[in-house]
Image 1 (cartoon, rainbow, N blue to C red):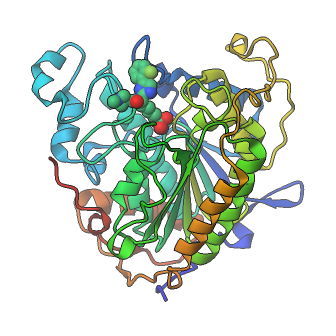
Image 2 (image 1 turned 60 degrees about the vertical axis):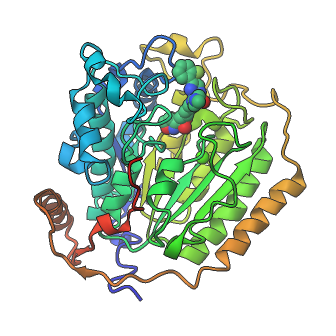
Length: 444
Ligand code: V1D
Ligand code: CA
């Protein structure tokens, strides 16, 4: 049994926040307005402006009144290098559209190009969204927050040495590494239509993180990985769970499958923290997607993940029909807050994006045929159950006493310690070198 296990899972009842005599999980919202002003390029589907739209809906509905809103700090190069190779971080810091030609020889190595273009301020963009996920993780660790939201994060494809699929820095891996310094087991859930390959790869060989991704899979659809045969390696065997789906999955099938898999995952693995990637490209009518989900169904999955009461980091991800991404993430912010929203969108400066209906719940479903048979979905569920049977109870981790290992980690721990003191938590911090948990990937 992990020393101190269970101490960090659910906040003491008397520290939960109350509204109208009811108890709620405390929610923090980490948003930097600058993140919406970056441009990947005219024809590129990734539009950071969707984050501005989301924030306007969140504020327009008045949701800031129910949560702690934070201006996040930027991630430092040292923090980013906890996962990424220093030479890759150095390249991202230096490259600009004007000097890009002088770096042409390393573009291929770092996979920079059409999907991941060098745009103005690319490194600033990365340090903003990664900093927000790190701040959010810190709020969970300190106990100041039960659910910490960063819609600009969730860039699940980035690898140690390279950019991939619109993702340069993997804020999820960075945040999980921080959570692992205090949490024995972290469950990562990914409902983006794409496979969460970067996160899976980083933790493939450890049992300290379980990854669960639902995605379209046919061997060809980006990134081409995520078959159910990818199950993890070494002590991480059976800790990578993949749910490969076909086009057009509908609300009922997706929500039922999601619930029937997540509940046994949590009961078998007993995570002490959860990271939920809420990619909105799994909605119907997405510019790059081909599923058939409504915002309510996407939100129902989020609500179900929340219902376990575990400390949860919530991040965004993909989503390319920007008006629907904003609707979805505003709605899900309300789900985390247990606040009901009316279907009429609030008046904001961006009202015209939501033409012609100006509703929170537009009709997004019914346009693609569901290619997933009941039998195939049942088979996927059974495969997960078979994998879970291999878990010999939740792994316990021999955690060391708090022992700062580097100046950046010590700085970080001091912030967390101060936050925890402010929060009145007398519990000891535990620490284990997160670097040892990473899959050892060599650059080729
Ligand atoms: F359509 C495009 C126009 C311009 C630039 C890129 C694209 C585009 C569309 N789909 N790129 C893609 C995908 N890339 C390929 C490449 C072709 N090569 C051989 C590979 O198919 C990338 C899709 C990335 C999806 C990212 C994500 O939604 O999962 C995400 N999650 O968090 C942030 C992004
Ligand atoms: Ca996914």
